[in-house]
Length: 99
Image (spheres, rainbow, N blue to C red):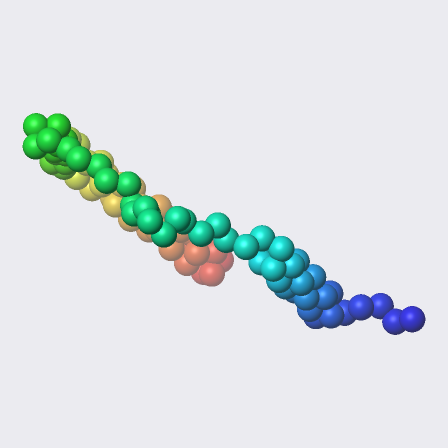
């Protein structure tokens, strides 16, 4: 007897779930609310009891000028260091080719 393929297994699982779903729908009828009563409960609230929800205003993030100056000075130092490293690598490359 050949083995089932993945597609056949998925189809079999789908059929099982479908069968269980059909059985559960048939076996459990939905309860019906009484016809003489209103299905929604009435809730009476006084105007003073109503709650008002206040959404908090988003806070703006303030950045100090010193922090910005530190950031840009560090960024400038990083670019200078990267340029020096590239220059050394290029000079070593050409020095190796010449020898």
